[in-house]
Image (cartoon, rainbow, N blue to C red; front, side, top):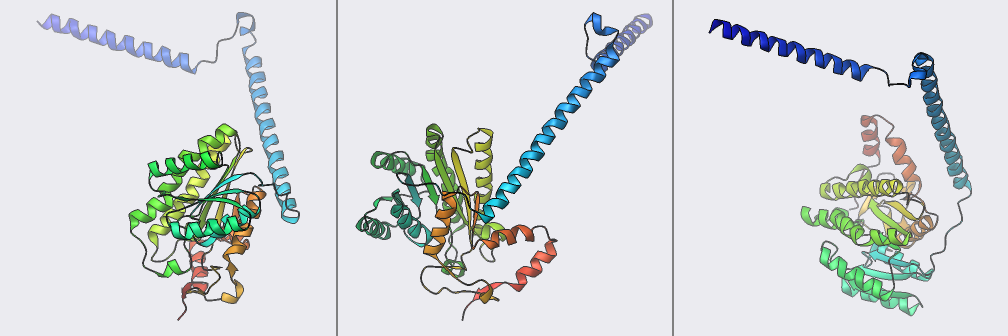
Length: 352
């Protein structure tokens, strides 16, 4: 028994040694330089140096090309600040304006129709929507009213099908739902589920129904409307702020998807930041600013006009007012405590 045990121990030791040797040879094979033809084997080092030099030159060339394109794009953007690009024509386009019953969506529908766009006015409030369509038609525009619950996938599919039957493939999508008005910021917020479904889930459902057809036609423009809540948040409006931040992320993801698929030149996207305490629906609101004279007020029809102007120039990001977009980007470069102090300075509240 002792001899048998010793024999097994020797056998196990030999197996381990063989496995270790085999592993060592495998590692050596992995670490060894690539195999070269026999006639080049004697020149291994010079050849490898040439290959590495070639790879380095290719990499440097790619970096140079990227830098040149970067600076050309920067110069082009600066030039467009002074002289904006020519606005594209929207005549004959089919626009779906979601949330057209009131606010900026209402004015967007009217102004798009005046530019020769066939407007599908989509809202769950049929009364205001029907009045809007009658107003557009009385001014010679083409529009139709659609009642739709944008949180219901089947309802969206039915509505999109009806629009395509009447007007053709949707080429412009304006999502104005859940963009708060000034008065809504000081009222009791809706339930969390309702806020997230209307503000976030509806975006996914609409894109799922419309974007593939834009890709098939190689033509389209998707406009995401968000409020200041998607930049810095709002007190007592956490669900709303979360939904607006999500819309910003969805815009970035959609833009990246189109870039990867090489469709960014045929299907355009625009993100619109609206500051609701500056927008008014032709009436006074309950929001005030500590330095109100520095900001002023912008009517919703003027805001819609600026949005359409940006869309016609294929701008990626729009802010109402315009200068606040640059200001928000600059504030992000400051320390967090410094930005909080600035918010304290221009905090909003109630007009009593």
